[in-house]
Length: 64
Image (cartoon, rainbow, N blue to C red; front, side, top):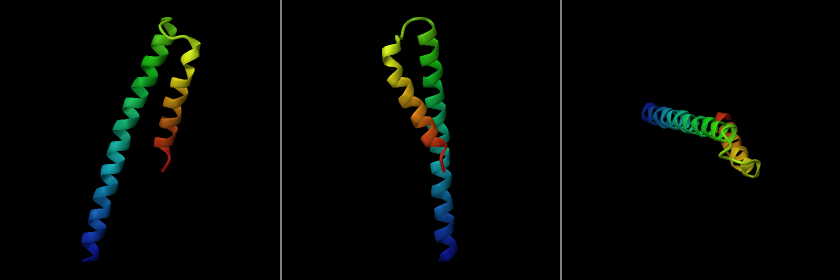
């Protein structure tokens, strides 16, 4: 019985880690796009809050 519970917990943790990895890829793509748009002049400094939010999410996802 204990083994089943442990196996289930491992399965859940693996799912969480996989999701975090996918979310980080999305966040990193968003940051890259923001930087490109910023460099191309499509985004002005006033939207830096969007980049700050993406960075904060990225940092949070890296925490254990």
